[in-house]
Length: 157
Length: 372
Image 1: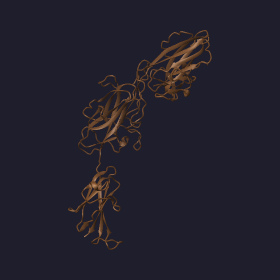
Image 2 (image 1 turned 45 degrees about the vertical axis):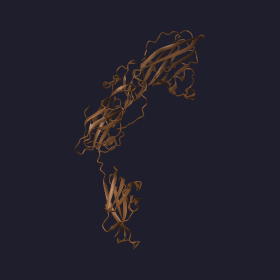
Image 3 (image 1 turned 90 degrees about the vertical axis):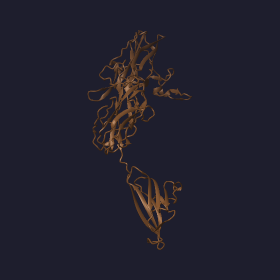
Image 4 (image 1 turned 60 degrees about the horizontal axis):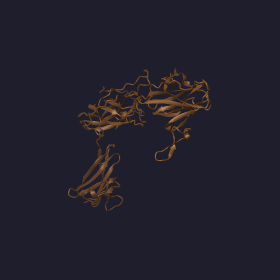
C-alpha cells in the first residue's frame, strides 16, 4: 500500500505527549473535528480542526499516522483501532482505504457480511452503529522510512 | 419578568405562516453527556524479519461539549376564559434535549401581535391580563397550590416537564383575545434548588480547548423565521398561546308553519274545513355554525278550536318528513332515541326536546290537530 498523501497533513496536530517509540514502528493517533469554513466566494467547505468544540451528532475524523523508523522492512502490518465509547463509525475518510470492521473485536469482515446476535436468540444484520473495531491490513511490507496515514469518520453519540 | 415585546411580521399580512406553536419535532436522544472524555488509542501488530512485534499509539482525548437544545410546546393555541376569571391557566411542556442536566428560566410575556395568524385563531390581541406568573407543575399535570416553583430546576437530558402560565382576566369591558408567550431560557444546572444563571455560548473566537466543556447552542428558531420573538441557536425559545373570551352565544330562531293534510272532501286542493287535519311544523335553526345549542325545548300551545291528534308528534327531521315518532306521555325515557316529545292535555301544550342544534342544519318538530 502506498503512503497516503492526506489532505489534512498541514492541520494543527494535537501533539499530546506521544510516547517514545518502543519499536521500529511509530504509531500515533489524532482526532479532528469537522468544521465549516467560509470561502472567499461565500460558499462554505468542510475543514478539519482540533476537536475543541464537539457535541453529540458532530462528525470527527480519527487518523492513524504510522512510520517505519527502523532499518528493516516491517511485514504483516495490521493497524487496529477500537472505537472509543461515545463514537459511532460512519465510514472511511476521504482518500483513505476502506477498513475491515468488526462488531466484536474478533471477526473482521466487510460490514454487509457481519451479523449481530439478538438477545433471546437469532441474529440480525449489523449496521454502522454496531461497529466496535476497525482495522487495516497492509498487503506489502513497509520499507524503512516509509509511512502513511489511515483515517475513518465517526460521529459523536 | 421582561418587558412586553412587540413583534413585527416581516412577510405582510395575508400569508399562511408555518410559524407559531406546537412545532413538535421528533428529536434524537440527547446523546453522550457533556464532559464525557472520548479517548482514542490505536494498536499495530507486525513482524520484522519474522519476529512479531506490537505497538500501542498515544491516547488522544477530547471532551464532549454541551449541546444546548430544548423544545417548548403549548398545549392549545387558545384557551377559553371568562370575564373576571382569576388564575386562568395556559399549559406548556418543556423538553430538555441537551446532553447535560440544566435549569430553564421561565419568562411569561404579553404580546401585542397585530393579527392572530400565529396562533391559527382569528382576531387581534385587544386586552392584557394581570398578575401573570409562570409555575412548574409538581407532576400531576394540573395547576394547583402545590405548584410554586417559578423555574425548571435540574432537568435531566430528554426529560419533559409541564409549565403553567397563570393570570387574571379583567372583569369589565369587551375583550376577546390576549396573546401570551412563554419565553424559556436555558440556564446552568447542577445546583438543586438554586436558580441557575442563563447560559452564555462559548464564543467561536475563543480558543475552544479540548479539555474544557464548551457551551454550544443548537436550539431552533421556535417561532419561525417570520416572527422575531426567537432566533435559532440563542439558547432560548418562545412559544405563543392566547386567552380567548368567546362571543359564543348561540343564535336560535324558530319558524312555525302549517299545512292541511286532509279535509275529508278533496284530495287535491285541501281546505281548512271543520274536521280537516292540520299539521304544524316548528323549524329550529341555529345561526352559530360553531357552537351548538344544547337541550333546546320547544313548547307550543294549541290554537283554540282545534283538537290534538294523539301520537302525532314527530321530532328531528324536516317539516315534510317529520323525524322520530314520539309518544304523548311526559316520560321521555320511552321516546325516540335522540329526541323526545309529549302532549299535555290539561294545558293543551306540545313539548319537544332537542339535545343539540347546530347550524346549518335546521331541525323540525311536527304535530297534527283537527279543526273542531
